[in-house]
Length: 389
Image (cartoon, rainbow, N blue to C red; front, top):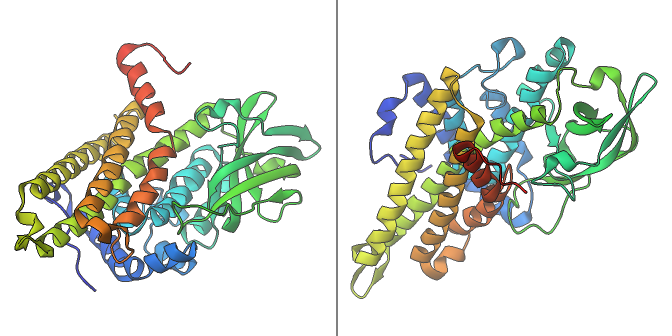
């Protein structure tokens, strides 16, 4: 196994604690040893490597910032960010799985669930005995989730759920779905278990992106949800958006892993690829590309570091997360494309990770809020004028 030493031009590692670096290095070794050797094969097949899930649970990668009483690692948000970074160096689909399990399933149960719901679900999700998914996006409502048409109707002993969700990571393999639906016009969260009558989760096929990830529809046809499966502390659409903010934080960190994978691949290739009697790394145009990529990686690392410290201090606002998600996803995709240029025709081969990361990042830039939506979120914050309509 080739040891990955990372990309750290400004010695940012010196800003991290020993514990944070230990977490990072543990996941880095796991990615190098168990994800990278097999991920191209699974990407080719269009399958998620499910055999990795128990090991990720053993390493404490699910709900890792939540309390130990629920079987979680209770690490800080910087360490959690580094986990996401290293997982995405392996593949965006692997990071997406952990991100959904943690930020979009365990976080809402911990934040909005009853004590009984937390005690039952969180330990099982942390150990990966159970898998979860998050149902908010609908076929006709992506950037405008408040327009959702999925409805919950009160009935004896619980609720009847009707509607559909789209682009749901983990949906087909999930044991439980955190589903958002309007109850008397107000968005509420519900836990819907696999096997519930009227509930189906067909896999979405034909993806050119996130191929090593499970993406699904969720369909609800008079699905009965018992009263005890409603998340009692949810309070409108804001609750769902709080979950998205957790996921966006993880994405901002995660894409730096993809950046590093593409940059190191391009740098190594440029130093070994000889044209016109010398390595292409010796040419000014190639050096300009490499320096640009290194500069953007370094800026993203510093942005994430500050983001994590503010989150641990309790001073982070959702607009700060939007700024980071917007910037880092855009630059990650740009770095993937520049890396492909340096590799030339070889860049499209899965002998190298670049084209896979590039295809994945097209989705990562779009999901959990498009580039444009995050632009408008920050734009409203700095001007005072909402420009969403």
